[in-house]
Length: 295
Image (cartoon, rainbow, N blue to C red; front, side, top):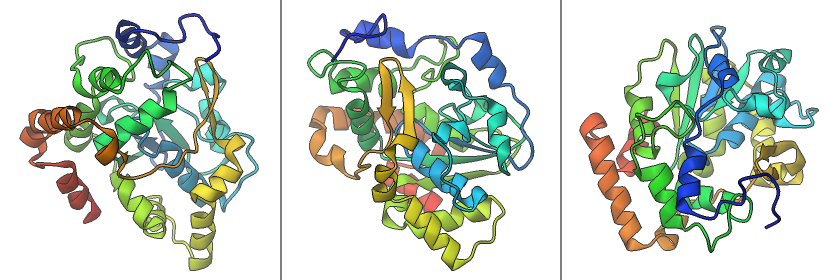
């Protein structure tokens, strides 16, 4: 790893905790107070749950499959971090409806529009997030999978200053399904998108109020495959503390089954029982996934 921005690479869990606890600046807070138009859509997920993937689908649907953008963030900006990358919230207005990305909880999102939330198995999410940052934010020998699990998935820092990681993965799930929002919310499971991408495209299209033909559906499905997005990976990059990161990865399902130690799997099961089951009634991620697939 080459040393670049001050404070990186992260070498200790204490530094990792400081990184995920940094409060928002005033610009981020102001952007999160944006009043949306009624047909605007926010795709908000916990990190590494299919934000870029679903954004590509939604943008394709609203733009008739336009791929002329240099970078998806130019037409599909982040609310809380886009100002760091020069993303103007009004840039999305080149198309209708307006589309925005976020990792915030439902209760902290701008009001007045619609929201799409993609959920993903917590173990797979952890594995994906860790592998996303390794060799960019930290070296594998310095920060372990267990450290990242503690800081982003298990600790309760809901009393901390407002930032992207103030609530953990399990609290994020609860907030989205218990949250009070003034517009429609669509829930989709990442795993179901992998199994049946055409069905996911149709669900998102209906949520956007679009009646699409089979021919157009096939076009959007094709432009949303891993193979297509990989061939155009330069259009799906994100600015990160140490440079530019490609966002198109394999997105495999089931990595946690063989990649997580048994004690960490048990901690995740315990956290689900602590945070999710008492609030939502679902005893496992599988139960929640089944419930939203029927809506």
